[in-house]
Amino acid sequence: MRSWQLSFLAVLLAATAACHDSKTPQDTKPGEKSPAPVAPSTTELVSLAWRPASANQNLQAFELQLTGADVVSACHTPPGWILEKAGVAAIKGYATVGAGFISVDDLQDLDGLFLIRTHPGETLGVRGKLLTGVYADDGGQSEVAATPPLLRREPAEQCPQPKG
Image 1 (cartoon, rainbow, N blue to C red):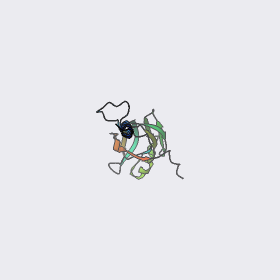
Image 2: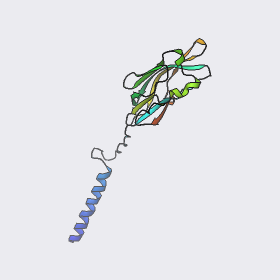
Image 3: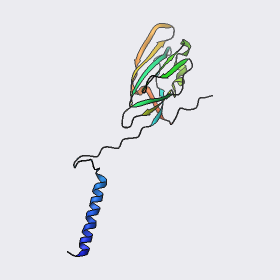
Image 4: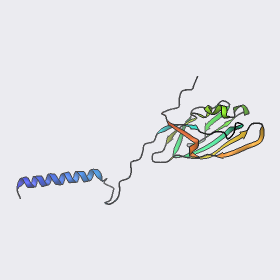
């Protein structure tokens, strides 16, 4: 074999090895797929997307436990409410007086309540409950199960500045 053929063959083998190594991680066995890249954690501002079933219904309290995210901070407390982190991945809020109940006229008070940090590669889930009531009916309280569509999320690095 001529010397230029050996050089050409060596370059070809080196190029083939380099291409093969860039596609397959060292810990992946032949025939296995490489793991999908994991999305980085993100921070998001969360609002409650609760809507009353009637003009007389109101929101009196909620308790939420998240999976796939941690609560970073409480951002906005509706007037007449107490809002607090109840653990790394939980938050609760409740009206301290009846005048603080959130009605159809006060739904903007549910915007931007808290900031979360998602866990890489996990889907956000929620469990818990909302306590609702009906004006002019002391027996009208009911519990509503929390579901993921209850959380309206938007990307945010931090809590927004308080308005006004």
